[in-house]
Length: 388
Image 1 (cartoon, rainbow, N blue to C red):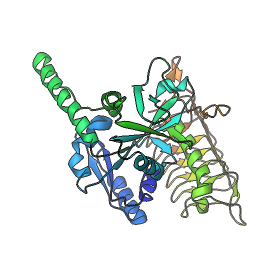
Image 2: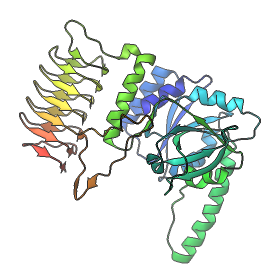
Image 3: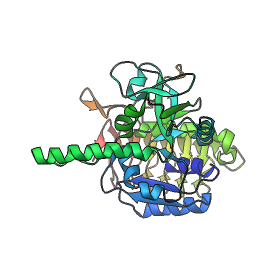
Image 4: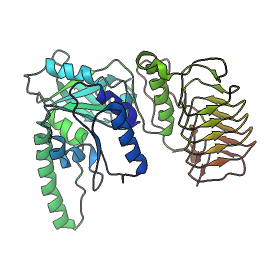
């Protein structure tokens, strides 16, 4: 997910540094990713760990000194759980066109249908000046069909506004601790705490994109995001898409294959398939609408549909791993992918099948609409289950 964010940032002229902020413990995988990305894109990248989950605004305020250490005139802030064409340079030009209007932020917006807009932050804009007049996070009734994409361009002035909220929250925390003895987290939410206050004060403007955008809130939406990125590669990186050649597997539609993958020529891949590093795929294998992560092994004549196969997992011969797609309505140009709840009517909601890392699927079984946690050796078929 982060690879696309970093690639988009690296293409912005005069980009000085990329900072990753989160409360997850850094590990060897993250360190290797940062190191390889720095080498590929020739830009400094570092990870800053929060002491707790501080919200979408708390993290950047906590590390404001490090963000401002290079003296930037502006900085981008992007949520990690979105996929997009990331029109950062267009946002930067838009910001410069409105220079002198004393605004401190540009919000990237897109259009959703009336029903689904209730699941996002909704933006009411002045169509002549692009000023954000009103902002409501996940309203209960229809407000606007322009939704927040979670991608922003801020000037350093934003920290003054966040600081006011921080001071107010500090006073409320102290009062709560004195009254009830209960500690409150130092969480600052950009959407609810900052944007709702700044809307209508000529401090925020919105840039609406006509390009693709989607949230990645579930594994099913990751498959859809992969499809969008593979389609984008036709314009940006056609060399990354596999093609039909003698002695290679049959390719249908958009397929990415890592150069280190070992794939039998009789396999059939696509559409919307991504094959990771060091993957082995045997003869007669069929893969469609799936992500196969690095080190996985798909043995002869197995079938993988609408699934994510985790790192170093094995799918046995003649086995079938299948999920149910959760795509947006293809007949509605403004439809977004729904974030399905995990359970519905007392059962697991049919969705894509996910195999965690180091999972072993035996030969001649069917795994359908299931989630398999890491390091499991299955010995039979499963359907609509979470295997703990």
